[in-house]
Amino acid sequence: MQKTLAYDRQLERFAPLDRVVTFDDFDTGFNGWMDLTPNFVYEDYESFDSAVDLTSWAPCMLSSAPMRFAASHGSMEGTYSLKLTTGAAAAPHTQPPADGSMGIAVKRLSRFGDPSKIQIETWFSYTPAQDRVGIGEEDIRAFGFYFDIQDGEHRYMPGVRYVNSLDGKLVKKWQYWKAREGVTHAEWNFGVEDGWCAPGIDNLWYGRRYEDGSSDGYQWVPGGEQDLLYNESPDKINWLYFRLLVDVKKREYVELQSMDQVFDLRGIQPTLADRYRSIDNLINPIFYVETDTDRPVHLFLDSVVYSTE
Image 1 (spheres, rainbow, N blue to C red):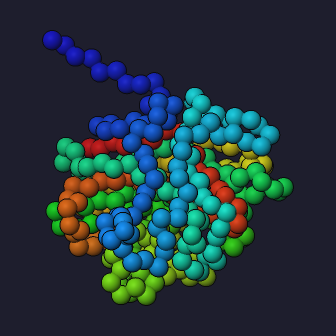
Image 2 (image 1 turned 60 degrees about the vertical axis):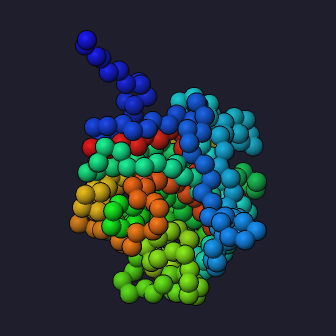
């Protein structure tokens, strides 16, 4: 019997690797994406001790992108996108994240087919809530993506972050996830000696932050300046392409693509932590967004492709 494989036409706007593991079109539902929450396993269902309130992040949702004046904006192709949003709260960028200042979405997967490389792609848009006059671009601190990976030896988190604005000043530069050499466990966890996260784990929450926008968990991408398309009003969103390729055999970055600009990250390795209990073969893709002021900001994902080779 001869078999014919036909791909969804929407994959034409992506560049997947040999095997498409998941193609998430949010017109069809959540497709397994959900809020990222801590481990509610202690007495009274409390989580582990943390200087950052990991229960405070705003929920993700399916959204037709309703706007103050544009009614429903819709998605890039269809009606619904996955919307990550924040609360109306932010700390200075040199301090730990404020309660409610982030929105985070995770898809819980596992290693499949013993891949040598894994890749995430999405078409996305970002904007603040149109709750006041002005362009609003400077109110979006950052957004990013990372993989949470554990193999038979290490847990590690290759990821990237677009620093859009710091305390109201536009920056527009990319960072990659890697813990600063020499950072201690207590420093990483903001003084909590027995904190759950080892250096290099959960960089979006932990690690000291510095005036120039770097941190114990983020390093600047060489030549990583990029002026992304934002448009001229919070109710006008444009869809942008994103791709991150990781070599899981070498445990190294390969490249980041944002729109038509490709950043070569070969030879850079994320921080390798010791294995955590009971999560071997974990591969979780995770997106997040951060606000820079007392204003909710949003990250919209039209569709997401995870592929391997």
